[in-house]
Image 1 (cartoon, rainbow, N blue to C red):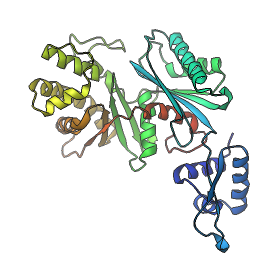
Image 2: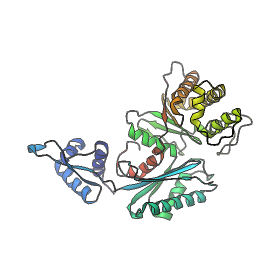
Image 3: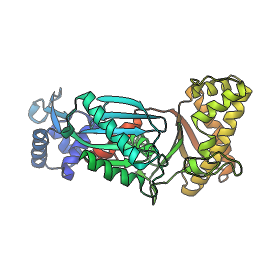
Image 4: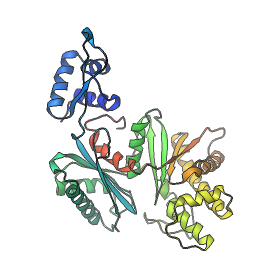
Length: 372
């Protein structure tokens, strides 16, 4: 286990790249003797390595030796389980993609079947990558809250059972919170924001005062299960009917568009609906207007409760994504307090950010990614 000052040095190298011992002394506030001792220990244990001579003089005019993070120690595995697709990544403290694999998510009706799936995926991935199990610091898993009907502590139960089977540290959280962690680590300028992702379901991550907010039971921000259709709504994964997620997700929007057009093209991407809407297609415009209104309705309750006015909306919408965000913003401003200054910004989903964010749950033991 690293001591806090060792973790501080690794964090500085993660944020700044190559640094000399004098650089570390200046940036960390540690004494010279402490820096020399800790750098030597971190190098011996394989956390850092020499990065070459810096092309600038140090004290006495001598060009200093630099140090960089090791690419192979520590390593972590990140897994993103989505309703239709699961991704598994191998990464390091620099969050580099060292190896990856994508598989279809099977129907997981029980907690045991979910753990079986994760165990088999990890073992087969290890064989494919020829990765020694002892080299892995741990496994982070991003998992949808309502994928399996297991009751109160889904994440804790998966952690305990998977960790027992694989004899490695396992941490599990909602997959959109893993994505949110990755985004905040990449963009530390915003310490208060809501992130909404639209894939096969709707996910929400909340950052309050620079910290990821989970809530009392780890279900903070679950607006996807805000009831929109009061009568005759579709059955949701959570067991209720008419939840937001049943009327706004990428599959539902595409299916509604194809139905109106009398088409059966199962490979139609969601981006096409947005493109056709921008081109003046009335059916596509009506579908997206309804989606924007329903999303704004659910979001308004969250925004009124926690008073955050910056929202990021991530999806596979293409170039027309910001137009949809503007429509959501218009509806929101009608629903929340007068003279509000809500900003909704569209971002293309970065699929790798889900498993990399999951791996950060393990790597945060070695580096401060700023969300606790």
